[in-house]
Image 1 (cartoon, rainbow, N blue to C red):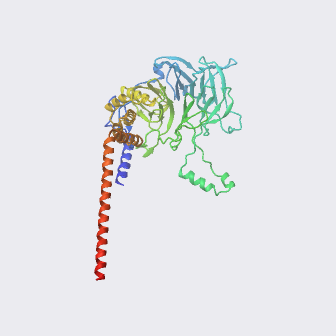
Image 2 (cartoon, rainbow, N blue to C red; image 1 turned 180 degrees about the vertical axis):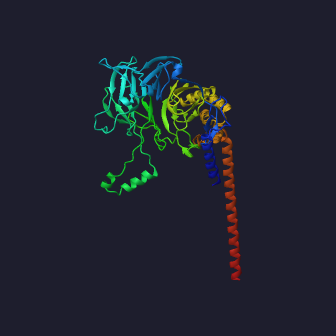
Image 3 (cartoon, rainbow, N blue to C red; image 1 turned 30 degrees about the horizontal axis):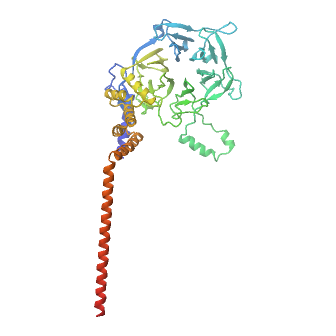
Length: 507
């Protein structure tokens, strides 16, 4: 009971420390936040930074006037960034170094030669297959598909299908396209998944709907409904899932996220072509394990993942609206780094909106500051990424030295202990694997290492063990014979006494 109380107390203190922007562990790089990670007990511990804010870029810096509530950012195959400048009804294409504007898309040419403009666009996607630009043109209730010269190829508007509720308006928030040309659209007022259209622009249904979270209230209502008439059921409000907030695509998989702070299931999903969530059985909490406590509002603020990005190396970057932080996970959803915060200084945000990555850098859009902040990888981040890459590709032994270097720099880094334990297990150093696995309570690795260590011990001491067993067996035989002799002697003695007693009685 005392241990449980101590753990609960430490979790509460961790939440207060995270929410209050601890000053005692400030990153040496001058970031306006403390660099931390989580240990095996899910408690916040100081950690090395994987990224550092390099600079913040505004529309003024690019020479096109101030951005106004930018809402999305996308990097194409050539390293060109497309920034959705929502309030100015335009999209700015910027070079890789964020030094020059290549083009401003504020007017488009329709197939009939007429001109059209955007009205509060919310999202943009550039197809690697055909090079086309897909724009979620929110207030125009359409998805605009254009080439990079601004020539409109086609439009996607509200479906007339019976599957689509005609009472609902068509308000595109985010958009992307797969290799086959299918278009997926996140709609601001739809909770049944992303609207899906084929390459010809025909509506084919909804994709990737979130599950309704099985809260105590919902379970209770379900049980009540078992004994409720159909008439009464029709008057009750239905439980609906939270909608998808944003998504990204990697190969044949679409990753989605939801910014609902009340939803704990399907916060982040990895969907295959059939819409099945590969992460469905993962027991992972995205964002801070300990919710942030806001002293100004006197309440706990839970994570709300408002955007997701899949890096070139497969890392999963999640942007938390609540804390203004980027939480980076590897392919297996192991937490790597936590970057950013709510603050006025460089590296801090007012209102995070969108996230993108390119090579080693991260790019975060702030719709209140009207800027894009560029985070560059630190030397520590580079070593971790090298180790993770080798580890996830199955090169456990090759990852051993990078993992050791990670621990030399940061003795609190949980993933390094796990990586070293796995590498030593693969290498056959079972005793070493047990040592590192025990430090982080990695029961699975420890048990495997113990089995290997036991077998290794038996093999190396086989002769001695056989001799001990033989000696023990001989001892047992000897003791058994001695016991038998004593039993026979005792029986003979009793028999003799009995005989003498009988002779005495006869006399």
